[in-house]
Amino acid sequence: MTSTPAGNWIGGQWNFGGEVLESLDPSTGQVIDAFHSAGATEGAAAIAAARTAFDTTDWSRNAESRAQALLDLAGSLERNGEDIATMIARENGKLLWEARAEVRMAAESCKVNAARARLQVFGQAVEQAPGVYWHNVPEAVGVAGVISPWNGPVLLSVRSFAAALAAGCTAVVKLPAQTALVTALLSRTVAETTSLPAGVLNIVTEAADEVAPLLVGSPDVDVVSYTGSTRVGRVVAAHAASTVKRLCLELGGKTPLVIFDDVDVDAILPVLVSSCTFMNGQYCGTGARVLVQRKLADTLRSKLSAALEAIRVGPALDPASQLGPLIDKAAVARVDNIVEQASAYGKVLVRGGVPADPELAGGAFFRPALIEVNDVDAPVVQTEVFGPVQTFEVFDGEADAIRRANATEFGLSASVFSRDEYRVRRVGRELRVANVWLNTWGIGTQLMAGDPVKQSGYGSAAGSAAVETYQHLKRYGAAQPRH
Image (cartoon, rainbow, N blue to C red; front, side, top):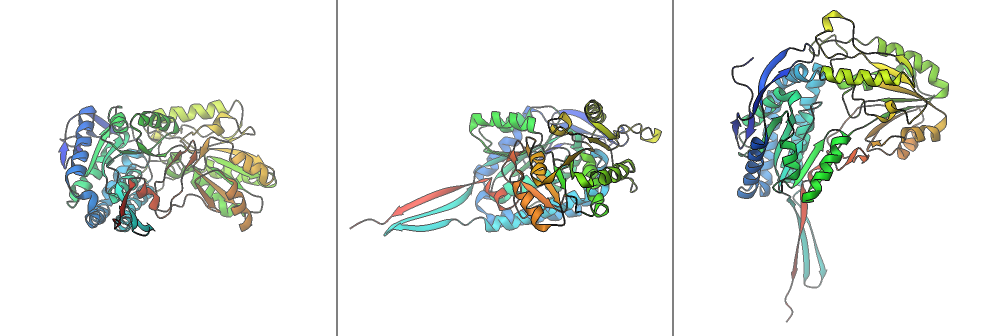
């Protein structure tokens, strides 16, 4: 452990207020280091710093400065990338290659938004009638509050605050205690980016529940981006109503993988397995539901079961590991309970659960589980498990596949697999989700938006629409005097 616990970055300075807590390595259960957990005092200071920076500097009006700062931040992320990725693996439990990809995508998000800072400054102009002129200009709405989760602490926070900064907003970013040391490294990277003026970007870690409500309820915060569970998203939306605050919500998911009987099973099998194990199953786009056409069910059931049973579980920093730990042992107990309850109404194909290996006893490990169910209303189908657990469901024909795929409250993502390119698009068109992967799963882009539907939220976290979340159009009118 270091002698000085990690602090919070507020107003261009390190802040060491708040309770001192310890962060644990979920692969071992051992303490990594200590950090300062922000409370209401630190949250209020961060909001005040962001408000002052927005109101008293030219940040919102200087697109070139914003673009340069975002490019500089991208460079800082790349220079510190290996340190940040290693800490993600240690503190979050994500495999190291996944952690490296997260940091790389975060840097890319800064670069993309740097370009948008330059491009999204143009409005429209029209002569409505002789001598009557109108034009509008996009302007930053003010201070942005960004509340991000522990499962993608760098990417999910950077993609939001980079869009906010590109739009001309200042920001307060609140990240959770489970990845406090990752947040400290991210804050250090921000501190090294001297082209970011003091107070424009403030980052705090919170173990309790004081800063997030401040961001949502404060009249000094004009827009909030929240990424997390649907349950908490509903609370955020309800509390934000008191100030009629703009929101961007990316909430839970229950991704169906719709597999028709003309596919090459051996070719898609690794994709199905990865969709379960990626980020240790702690991902809103996890391929949680395997929907397979009846003719192919026996073959896929057997091969997928064998593949999941063969997954090598181990520490996140071990190159041989194919599945790291969950975020903590409380998560293991919760996921194990869901699987145990499902065994009462479903057929357990792969039980998974806590490994018996003595060398893994200190960690928060959970082997993949696969449960066959017929009823789409079953709890394991309707609940976002947030762990390496898949359901196996059989369908008859396109209409049945579409009905089953749409049978949850979530609308975030889906995959469709078939050799018939017209069928994958036809079926994809009927799925009520933001993102449809065609004959693949899990690819992403910073360039194009996909808006969540149903209980998965609303608003865009990617594409040009992400910047528009943090801007409003101001309209100007002029009329030539009549003589």
